[in-house]
Structure formats: C-alpha cells, structure tokens
Length: 150
Image 1 (spheres, rainbow, N blue to C red):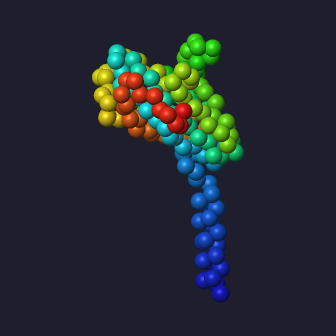
Image 2: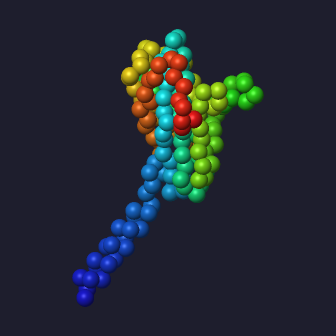
C-alpha cells in the first residue's frame, strides 16, 4: 500500500513539474514558436530578415532584441511606408507577430560577410518574459517573395 502511495505521489509531482516548463517559456505564460523564416540574399552590407513568431500561450510577450554572428541586428516597424528602429515589438497572447516584406522586419547591418542563397543565418531572438529562441534563417534568392505564410 505504501509503495502505491509513493508511486502516485511521484507521478503527481512529475506531472506538476511538466506543467511548469514550456517551449521557450520563462514564466509558463507565453508559448512561442517561430516559422516562415527567410532572408533574401543581400546585395550590399545590409539585409532584411522575415519570420513569424506564434504565441499559443495565454500571456503576451515582446520581442526585445536579436543577435547574430553575421552582423548587427535591429528590430524595425513600418508605419505608412516609413520604417524605424524600435526597442521591442508585441507578441499577443494566442496570436502572432509577423515580420514581413513591407512591414515589421529584422534589419541586418554591417554584415561581416554576405550570406549566399542556400546558406543559413543563425539568430537568437530575445523576449521580455520567455527564454531566448535560436532560429536558423535560410537565405533565399534576392527577389524571393513567399506565396504563403506572410
């Protein structure tokens, strides 16, 4: 009987601990995933990056910074056709932050080398509340325009 109680307590503890974690979540509220990432092959020492961050959690978060070993990366928003660097972009609870051509995006500046089509650029996305997420962004042709996803 005692073994059964110990086994039940161990199982309950394991389930409780499993609920505390989350994919990329530091506080258990946001549940972030990244998809549809790409970078058009740069033609200068600057490039743009696009992706979608989906939050399946009940708590909003914010993209606060991005780092990469290929150069400096800043976060930009586009309003009425004008882009400007921002400190952060919101990721709504049960929603998405879409970084797309002509809209909000990542800006790579002072590239140490120009990534070529077929290569991947590694970036680390940092958030207000969630753990950092590393993404391998595939480099597409300079004229690439996705038909779906953005």
